[in-house]
Length: 218
Image 1 (cartoon, rainbow, N blue to C red):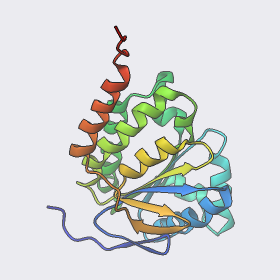
Image 2 (cartoon, rainbow, N blue to C red):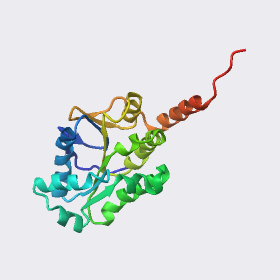
Image 3 (spheres, rainbow, N blue to C red):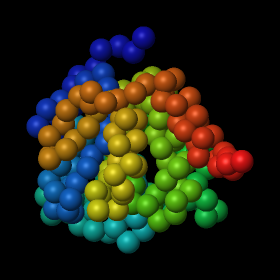
């Protein structure tokens, strides 16, 4: 069993045992209000921060951190702040490989202690998945499977979704794969979360039904 860990203040509440969170927002300003204190406080208390964003967003995030007094160059140089692009993280070789990405997350989780940090705070902007339908299908399964990693580690993982980019059915499935949720800027326990051992068989049955050709009336 995981040992008891100190709670992490986030979005008007605290992250305790469950630390896999989906954040829904309607504007960049709303997302920044929620995420910036979480990242700033993590750097201040010695946690590692990993930020995965679109290729054109990385410099903007660094600028926001610098604006609140963080020496981003020093944080990057010592390895405490790591910026990755969604292309390099999720879409290496132009495709999304769930198994490879789960290995990446496992390495990030176990690597924080190896590098001398108590835990990692990982912020993942998920806009990349809205570009291709197959990415969405794989993403839902991936989010469910990722719970088996995060339940074994103390790291906090924040998956950030722009509501303007994702349809209602996808949003519902995203909600069902995260034990914690931020809506309207406030962190809440998610009553709609479905554990992966229940959600994944349901998802696969649903896909099998969609793939089955329609019957022809005689």
